[in-house]
Image (cartoon, rainbow, N blue to C red):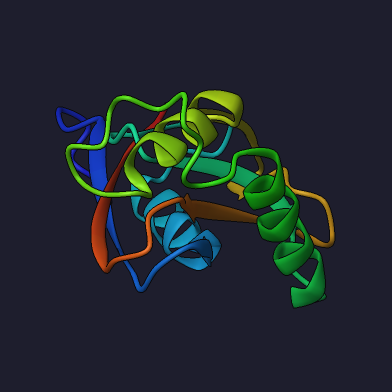
Length: 140
């Protein structure tokens, strides 16, 4: 049983470059530990160059198509970028995070996340290099 005085937990996700990294099972474990049967699971990624999404988890080609589409929409090397402190992928990563979601809310009923059959919860990494991403999770 989760300590009721500790309402927020942090999930750390190791990424290996751009792409979607599913962490639905880890989220379900946290929900089970909380003992919450009815309520809301709220997530916040604590970064400005990665985001969160709920997406299909049955066919990886859907994830690859999303990644390809976003890379076409926000290309690296645009001459308008001035924020290049951390490399060519820095400003595009910030734009991608601004265009996608940095918070999610998922209803909880009967101790389960009310996700659809093919839905998974993902950290969407927008940088090329390896990162450790932190997601704050509140279940109440």
